[in-house]
Length: 269
Image 1 (cartoon, rainbow, N blue to C red):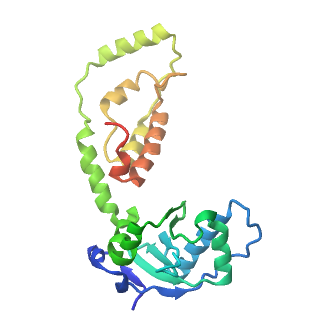
Image 2 (spheres, rainbow, N blue to C red):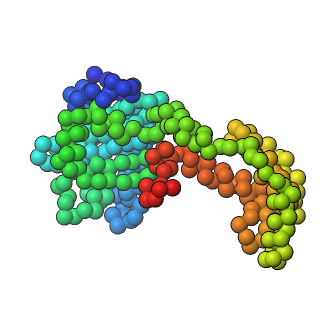
Image 3 (cartoon, rainbow, N blue to C red):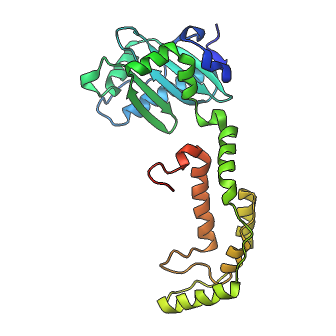
């Protein structure tokens, strides 16, 4: 059997015995010189990610480590999500150095024998206890377990479309407005608060950068408003450059998060 398979919708129906967990030895762990170092968890994570990348020949987007429960499962299992939408499964041999490192990073002294599910990626490290329900899913509905944990990159097109469909009604570029009234009220507000207005400047290059990245133009209303200033000191009126930076910062969040993650679950916003 092949320990690397392509991810597709059929994976939901696969059972534990449908996957081949190739026995592997982790040879990327260094000598453990400082058991108290806070960096040990990340060294352990990086060593496992590197080992699975060497084994599969592909970049690992995410790695799940299933630890033994000493009753029904006596092995460490790894499920690696690879670039190219592939999944690699393996049984990790309990060599002396591997057991030494795991004992070091397993800081739950009261529950050393209880199974855990570790979730590793290049920029994340987390773990949770494997409950009876989760244990059943892992070893009985294995395909569903693996499919539920896929990284966003596996369904990037679907997630991007969900977000695009959601946000499209809010992109309203054509607005009716009375610029003379806006200008008059703006000048009154500046005079009333004695604000220091930064003189307007030519923002055409910034507008072009935004349009190239966003796929739509800066609204004319905003361009007209920025003809009155280029930011106001000690206020929330931003310059065109500051607006573009702010948009880029949030765009990175928008790109990386799912629609579910973007929605605020603590309010109705």
